Length: 336
Ligand SMILES: [Zn+2]
Image (cartoon, rainbow, N blue to C red; front, side, top):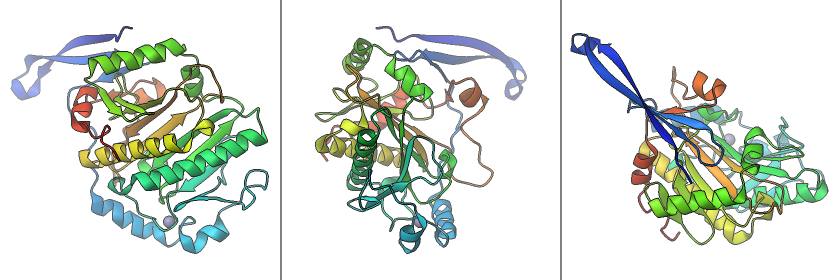
C-alpha cells in the first residue's frame, strides 16, 4: 500500500528580511482509504487554545434556558415512539437519549452525557460517561434498525461545543439511522476490505502514527486528516454501531475519553466525532471513527473550516499527524 505525499515548493520576497527571497513549502498527502487529500502547513498557530474561563462563563449564561438540564429535560425533550422504546427515552448510567426535534435522518436522536452536566469540559469526559452515552445510542440504533430494516446506515456523532456546530451548549451525542448513506459513509463503504486491513497493517508496522488500543479497537493519528488533530479508530469485525457488544462499547468509550483528554491537554475545547456505520453485517467493513479538534470558543474567533475544508473538501492543518501521535504517547494502550 502506498502512502502518497508530495512536497510543493514556493517562494516569497520576505518583508521581514528586507524582501530577500525565502523558500516556502507545503505538503500534500493522500488518504490511503478514500483518496481524499490534505494540506500540511508550517506551524502557524491556526488553532489558538481554549480559555477554560470563557467556556465556563458561556456555560453559566446558557444554563437558565437549557432544555437538556434536569429542570426541563422531562417536559421539554420529545419522546420516542413505543416501537423504539416503551419508556419513551433511553437511559444508561447518567446518559439520557431522546429524539431530535430537528431530524436529520429517518431516525435522529440526541443523548446528553448527563442532564446534570451542563458544563462538561473535554478533560471531564470520563470513560464511564462516554461509554454509557454510546451504550444508549447503540440500544437506540438497534431498535431503529429492527423497526425499519431498510434504514441500515447508522452513525453516532458529536458536535462538542458551539464552534463544532452544536446549537445547544449542553454536551451531547447525536445518532442518525438512515436508508441512504451520507457521502462519507458511502465513500468508506466503497473501500475494499483488504485496503482497510493493509492500512492498519502498514500503520502498525511503521509505528509513527499508530497509537495502539486494547483487544477490540485500534487508534491512530490520521495520515491525511480531514481537520485539526484527527484521530481515527477502527473496530474490525463489526460493521454497524447497532452490532456493538458491551465490551466493545466500553473500549470505544475509554478511547474517546482518552482522545478528549489528549485534546484538552493540547489546549482545545471543542471537537467533532463521527462513528461511521455501514449496514449491519456488511462483509469486511470495519466500523470506524474520526475525531477532529475545532476552533476554541471565544469572541471573534477564526473558524477552522475555511473555503478549503468546506468547498474544496481538503483540510489545511498546521499540526502534523506525527507530532499529534508523539503527544498521544502510550495513553491509548493503557488499561482503563
Ligand atoms: Zn443544560
